[in-house]
Image 1 (tube, rainbow, N blue to C red):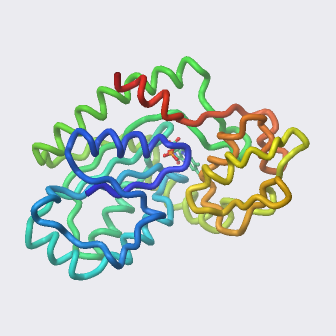
Image 2: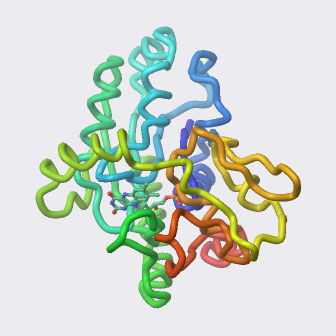
Length: 265
Ligand SMILES: Cc1cc2nc3c(=O)[nH]c(=O)nc-3n(C[C@H](O)[C@H](O)[C@H](O)COP(=O)(O)O)c2cc1C
């Protein structure tokens, strides 16, 4: 079983591809009730968690999902010695994100046996100094992801116990200082708005992984449950989904299904 979270589809692409290469079923965390999860010994060989790195940490929605996994599932995981692994997708570096995930799993009595980072195009656009990658870097990252995912799949299939994660410099400092600030102040939902360029296509609402956007009077309205994934911003065909004034001159990136198909062909 592979559980994943994704906003702009980098992690979705990795999870789907890993699912087809390992034979594991793939489930999207926001659509999955953790309380009903169970192990099928005839089907589940491993359990993987695939998620984007947020502020050198793990998206809270992923930690919350793990915290709520049922005890019976945990004891079956351990009884069947299931191989537990994770892939942290990131624009550059993970900081201590994987250690954060490991801690959450350990707290539940689950041992993380392998971890990998997967460097993918950057999507964070909500602070000055951040932004999408230049097109050549974006393409290079996507090209390199194909081989990396294949290699991760082989390792999952052979249950290779390894940690191959790009922590980046000063990982402990970054995670311990920035992640708590991100959790508290990371996004001000009131700053999301649409501009006159909005054509009311609803793509932002469809792309929001947590259903936080509704369409009223043909225009998007943001609720209070934003995970700050930026999918609404990146998917907008007219660049009209904006966060304050910060995103006005930022680039856009969204891993469309067609690109994923091309990468795998
Ligand atoms: C809120 C937020 C915080 C991020 N923080 C980091 C970070 O600390 N380090 C990093 O390398 N990339 C960071 N990124 C980039 C994403 O981790 C990366 O682009 C990821 O592959 C996006 O995954 P998704 O397309 O599945 O949502 C951040 C992105 C967002 C939206």
